[in-house]
Amino acid sequence: MRSLIDVLDLSTGEIDELIATACDIIENPAKYSEACHGKKLATLFFEPSTRTRLSFEAAMYELGGHVMSVSSGASSSAAKGESVADTAKTVSCYADIIAMRHPKEGAPYVAAKNASIPVINAGDGGHNHPTQTLTDLLTIYREKGHFENLTIGFCGDLKFGRTVHSLISAMSRYAGVKFVLISPEELKVPSYVKSESIKKKGIPYVQTEELMDVIGDLDILYMTRVQRERFFNEEDYLRLKDSYVLDPKKLEKAKKDLCIMHPLPRVNEISIAVDDDPRACYFKQVLNGKYIRMALILKLLKEAGTL
Image 1: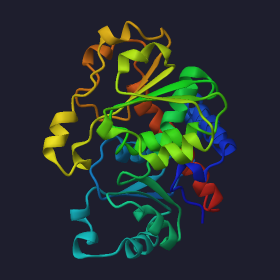
Image 2: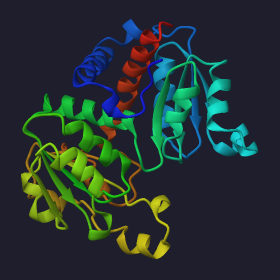
Image 3: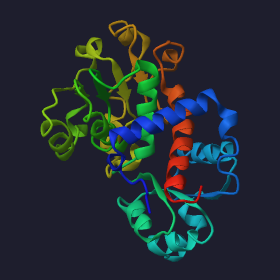
């Protein structure tokens, strides 16, 4: 049974196919409006989410399918101590496909090993968020038309940001890519991410604490939120949370075709004054998330032989 736990579970060819399907959905929505007629998606979200959960649900509805939702651990049998494995086996009796978000790293992997239907990892702790990465890739493709020869700046929380780790892994497979890693010392990219996805592949990279020193070099600027929920120490969070705030003044030095991205939710790391800048792509990302999840649901149900 094919599931999606890590974006690297997909080859670059499969990512190209998903992007092609998503673009076709955008151009021809009526063609897909009954593609999942009679199929059911279970969204099991044991951690708070707005965009990811709603985009999965909107994706399934727009494919003509149905949705069953668990929106918190407290409202499920997990509150009674049920294991992830047993939850997966149980939900497999009711649904055709599962999207799971869980605070524990590896929980969707355990679910996939025990489910008899496809499981999509919708985020597991600070580990992986493959459908956000697919969303990011579709956004880059629609804005730039290609993945090669891009200089990508990641700014903010690069230590706990699972979206950053996943996108670095995904983009490291394309030729001519360069990474610029912008963060305070305490929130630097983990050494294992640098080792596996950057150094081992010989990808050029720059590490800096100063956004303004590098902003003019970037084709893509991926801003991130400093996440209170990933900190053990409130004092450290308060000290670092406003490390980088992107505003129109800073963008004066940026390229005219810079693509500004953010996985959202935003707190104050991007000024609302930036929202009207044509380079702001973060709300386009939100919409792209629905389309790429529609493409992924179709792919996994077809490979499972249930569509």
